[in-house]
Length: 137
Length: 393
Image (cartoon, rainbow over all chains, first blue to last red; front, top):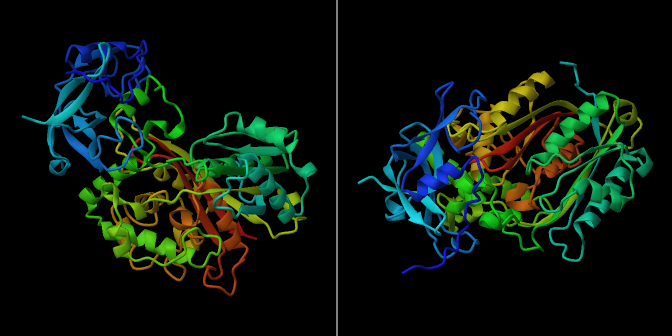
């Protein structure tokens, strides 16, 4: 059964297309700079550290820990208004960068800082697949 | 750096006392505020050559405002970095005046957030009126149901985790602000509250309760800033700008520890410029969008060590008569919060330095130096911080 996706969808730009293409294949990729070796998040067309142009896509392990989180009980936005309470979180990937996400497939009360999590994907539209995190199995 | 201490002064202020004005436009509130702030200073329309404003709703805010007021300013600044914009404006006005570009600047703001039904804190992605996401960073954040309160709640959660800060300590901030509001006849909420009231109010985004969150009102105001030569001939005793510091904090490509907020960068700049120390500050106006905002800001301003903010705000220290009175108008938690509140920090700091409340419980005794720190945006993702230090003549 499919229902129409009523949450916001990302806008794909040239510098982020490879990320969204990878999500559609079930892979979480991040960027690393060929010049300075630094990982970065969110994806962008330059290295945020050394401002070089040689950023390369690499597959993340998809594993990390909850850096912080909140259980949200109020959001007026359609799609989220019906979803409350949900867990908004910052997850620190094993590669060392932190990304915003939802922790899903668990009771919000069980989420805690330091909790091991792993990436999981949900298909929003034929073009867009969105990464989320769930408790590590 | 060039010594800019006392290179400009606040000479006129006005707070539009409305908290609900469905019959007015934002421009009308700004217009009325500018007129009365200039009258407070003893200046006229023709004296003004600099126009500073920010808006969370209207585009082209500076153009539209100049049009409405029928002014032709020679210096315009629409720096819009959220609620702290007006501390940035004061900093920029100081620099423009010191450089001789202008003599008199007006900084003004208004919002109809309440009568417009704007869900400032919980509106989600629609809260700023941009339903189509930008490729970045929105497209990596708003998919997950970000809210302003949620972004502050995540910082509160980690602060509790790292430092043992409690919900009761955060509540102390709300209690102190309400105490001050009880002495402000214009404040929206004036009935005293207790720590139990705050922690017993419903949870909006864990661990922040309803009464950890600022209120939503309409409102506006204006500040007139002038060169020393002009200031000396104004109706009011000047309130001098001693130091300013500006900063932006953000995720740092996924690596910054946002437990340190923009105040950590802006505060040393302002104190160094002013040449004063924390012990010299008699009162502070600290942006109180949420209770955690005050705790984090006081730490990163340097009034206490990182992690000790929960203890610092407890026991009435923030009330007049305590060690560091803050937000003596009742703050955004109880007095008013029309979308962006930074302007009102300058207004109340000026009133305190004018000793406007002498003989009442609202006046900080012998107030000589005040600090205002505006925060705009969200602590958990990206935000601005503007610190200003003001002195009585």
